[in-house]
Length: 271
Length: 321
Image 1 (spheres, rainbow over the protein chains, first blue to last red):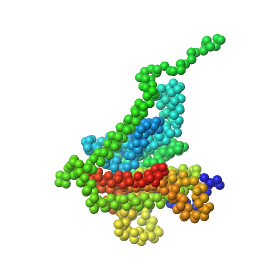
Image 2: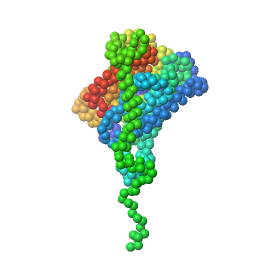
Image 3: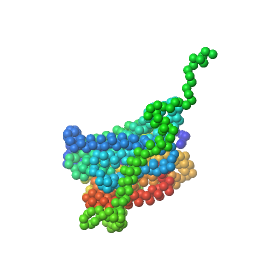
Image 4: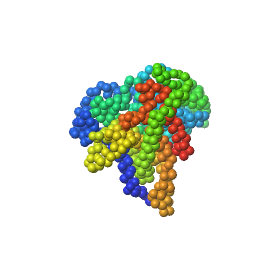
């Protein structure tokens, strides 16, 4: 690092970096404007007028509510499964060295490293070979599988920072294994688990590629949106739903960032 | 010596055996750490092993089946015929188109990502650093479909881009570009250019983060030393910064390349009717009902990514992840 204070960047670099960030953010802001447009049939810009009526229309659409409720239920259950599996795996991998340890971490990362379509079609062909009908649980099965990795990443990073001697001290003072877990281990990893859980929820809530293969006729919110993108029925409703989805996914990310910002690895840096 | 007499009996060095099932279980796990390890590993390994690896094997198995062309039923006999079908001109065309797109998207992402990553790594401090980090993180985690939808709004014929170009009196440029073969089309939202832009947009954050991580590790005084020794900024970039950032770029390209190879939603919503690998897989398993061919198609990105990862590992890209 330089010793003479913070250097100032060349103008060209500043401009290029700013343009890059604008490129990343402007399209998302545009969604917020379109949610208020009075134009129904096209994507005309600038919007001919602004209105709040589409929020009421969307509020009264049962199909949107059903899709939303399915998405929330799937995301909640998948997050729970991922929390249990991810924490167990992280505890095992970070506490001890054993044969096949590297393979375990690879196994956890694989579902997110391979393209979603491969995970999706693999699950579908397994369901069809085993003759399992599509249900709520087939969606959860897929989602939990790729959510494990975000919980695992956060938990491993936290385990690495907490010292194992605390557990030994707790045992020396007479606590049994369960008391140690409840009063020593859990408080130490709680925020990492919360952050991992938030990210897992956001990941599952937004997932569409794997879901198209495991949902059958059921509609999660992303599948509802995909249908609207391919065969638009009422564009303003889609605009409103898109805006709500952005807000719903951003809140967990901000919370997860806030919970882990002092650590050596910040939540969400790998999706 | 009355004091010692009133003192309580000292605690035994070894605690008595804990009572109850819970205590016994706790003692057992403490005494046999291997059992604890096994119990911890069993659920995740069973889940991932059965659900995920099992499914991948089921998929691989299917690619060696074939479809009966008359009845449309799947013939469960080992054959390489399905892989032969993959080599038909139309299918090779799909593979070539997807790989070309993935390569172009990777190059463009690296170009756009570098200044952002470099600024964030070398110049941003304190609050700005956090802002840059969130500035990359929020688009990364924003809804994938909403991002695509936003671009549908932007690229539409009546959308904001056309409006902006009209204000700048540059519409002739857009029309000229759209009249070109291959990259052009009726409007940007039904052209390969549109597909390309959306791919770059959606995967860009995946490139920025590893490049930034690699650049964070370049000591600032290396850049100063280079300019002290008389190198121009361009020479410093070529001979110092770029080689040191390369593992990060390769790490990021793993994501941009792999994600482009497997995506079927972006080219379906924004782009021409010419298929990409992901779309071919989707339509083969869905409407065509030819699961063996769909399975064989998915083996293509797996093999390509296998070679890619092997090459990336040799370049040390995994340390930059």
